Image 1 (cartoon, rainbow, N blue to C red):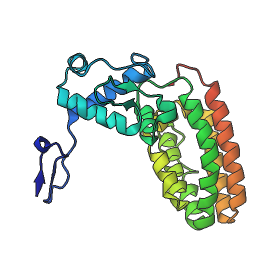
Image 2: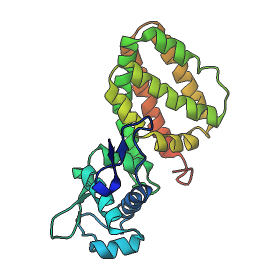
Image 3: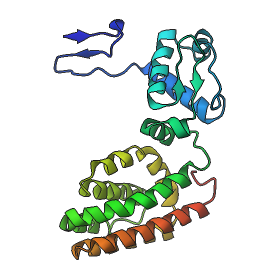
Length: 248
């Protein structure tokens, strides 16, 4: 059985090759429009140009544009209305997790996005650290303890910090934590490259890994929650003090 792009359906074939990759032009068109929404070229509650005109501006075919707009409508970026101009929705209010993930991957980050993201981590990280120690204290202790003696380099800490949070999310046995975290992998790594360029901040994280490993060994979930909240709060404050041109 085979579906083709000509049928208006996603390309798929029932053989060992499985799903076919999505069409690149539609993905690129979607990304360009998102950048235009975020940088203010098309503002919230304004309308996109007519389809023919917009397709010419973007250098794509009208079917490609329609496909991109359908994707954007699905996530809450735009409202497509038959016979009326396409409206840019208030995606901060009407958007889905797809909007959040797309912003995190964007090169045009709104001014308050990173502080708001760190505020979210301050809420979530203590919860998944607690759950991880409740469910898998021995594994958490051993695996996080291995990071205590890693090299004191920016790259090592950038990788390690991501891995530690993924480990805690998975060990929490709540897959929603992991899905949320994975949606921010690209921006997380960009932020980490700036954050861990400071030796003092690397030392703070090393101390956190050591403390959390010892706490997990004692199977003290309450302490895991407390120390994680404290460290995430300090990390948020440290980020606010970094130079604005330091990778932000």
